[in-house]
Length: 160
Image (cartoon, rainbow, N blue to C red):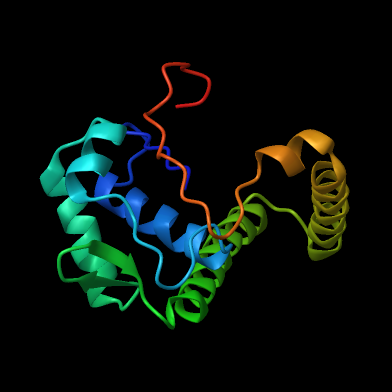
C-alpha cells in the first residue's frame, strides 16, 4: 500500500490517510481480511504523529472499512470494498462539480465545456491504456495479496 502525505495541501493529514486507505481498498491494493500497518509503523513510515494515524484508523473503523483483530491489529473489513468504491465516486463527483462550476462561472458555454471534457476523457483513457500495457507498470503494481510498505513523504517539492 503506497501512501503519500502532503502536509501543506490544505487537507488534514488524517483525512489524507483515510482517503488513501479507502482508495487502496477500492482498487484491491489491500483486500478484505488483510492486516494493515500498525499505528506506530504507519506513523513512522509517514513521519507523522501516531495520534494522527490513530484518528484516521478510528474513522475508518467507524465507517466499517477497518476492523480490529484482537492481538493482530487492524484489517480490512469484509464489505469494505463496496463502501470505498462508493466513497471514491462521491469524492470524484464533488471534484467534477467544482470544476464545472468554475468553468461556468468563467463564462465557458456548455458546448465548449462538453468538448473539453470529452478531450480530457480521451486523453486519460489513452494514458491509462498505455500505462496498463507498459511492462514497467505491470512489474511495479502490487498484487491484491501484497502489502508493501507505505512511503514517507517525498522530499521533491514537485511531488508535494
